[in-house]
Image (cartoon, rainbow, N blue to C red; front, side, top):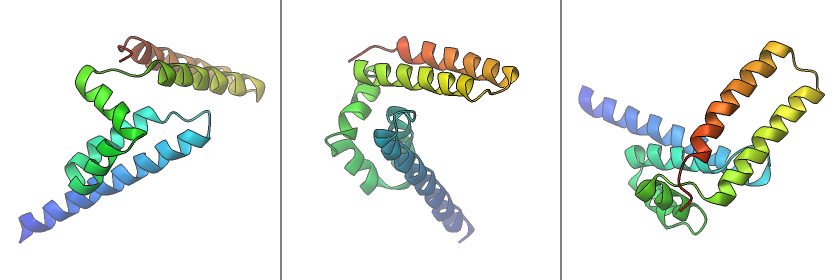
Length: 126
């Protein structure tokens, strides 16, 4: 009984994380400063452990499915997604400068963005 309760709790946790990631990714379609691809990939990862039905839906979805398959097969991120991610990072940094974020926060943001950018832009395209 205890093992069964843990299994359901962990499935619920994976489903909750997957739902949060997918919702964030969907919001990223509308908001230019929020990337879609990483959140959809995270959602697929979570749903693979929490909900086979939603995971299968993601894989067959006309918009989300191809980006998940590109990542699975080749560790690839599309050129369009890379450009959008780069533009979003640049815009976020520019907004931080314009609203006069403290220097230490700008430096931390820039360092994180450099590493994220290096990861994104060194992945193959398709």
